[in-house]
Length: 430
Image 1 (cartoon, helix red, strand yellow):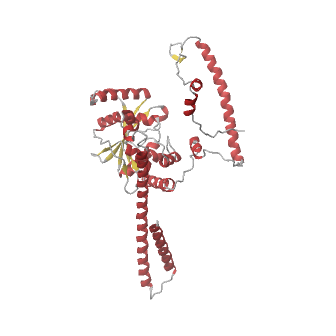
Image 2 (cartoon, rainbow, N blue to C red):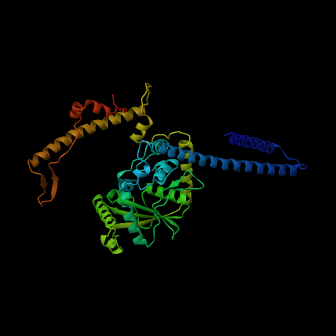
Image 3 (cartoon, rainbow, N blue to C red):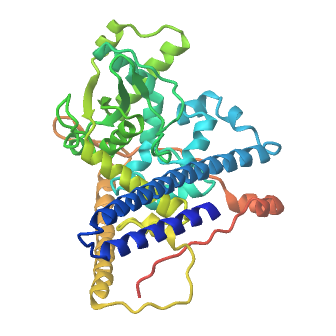
């Protein structure tokens, strides 16, 4: 820290001297000497500035390394009381859900990954800048969404489709990649294409009317915005010009069938042949992202600001507008402070009151319509139209629930031992 302050002082003094010389009016006699001194001072200033920037980058890398060491230390410290992470992540279920090694799980805390990038620029589908910040600065592990889990499980199958369609061999099982110029930028890649000097990324997408508009023609970069930012981030980390995105379209039922086929193939050690893949007639497309200079510069600038101004300074970003979870995380505890709102804010409260009233009225209407339909069933279980097409079902369904009241009566001490009290804020309109 002392060295940084000294360089700052030298830089400041050099800048002041430079400005002072600029304010002097050189005469015809000593003008050449003045210009030479000015040039020399400019060189000194540039040299010190370069030294400061180099030191700034070194400090950034040191902080990242220290953050990684702290996480490793925490794992070692708790090893005696808990199963090692390596054992937890070595089981087939964890591999299917996570697809990241223990080291990668730790390294993810020391930088910004591809799935974080879209959230940081405000285009995240499942995350916000605040949720990314909390993931980097706390010990909590980010849970996989249903879409992420599905993609991880089907990734080997999608890779097979990609290799069949393109004829390229994918290199996978890669270590976490870190950009040398911007060490806060990380990438856990699905694969590399050595023959093409490019990156491979694999996705699954539920093909509905809503999602169709997000995907353009095959061979273009017309993909959902959060995926576009993700692959742009990967291209920046790897300094690659091209990312090929293989996408398997379908519905959940179809994806489940593909998963069973792939699992059976792996279990019997009988890889699917090219003919097998062709017979499945999968809806599979390959999109292409070409590195865009302007997008790359803006993305790096945004990520650098997020890392230095928020993560390293323990300065949480503001909650994202319209995201309730963000506000619950940002302001978990209420104090006694009173806020006087404007007329515009009062109008917002009134609109919410009206929406809640409409919702209550719709709930009453829904219950009434539902009762009328149940009356049509009687003791039958299916309603059909005149052409015998099914319209609705009302069947028996068994549900097993934990009877906490009976358990507490039979085992009061054990129930108290495993009971937890949580605190949450509740919004009430008066």
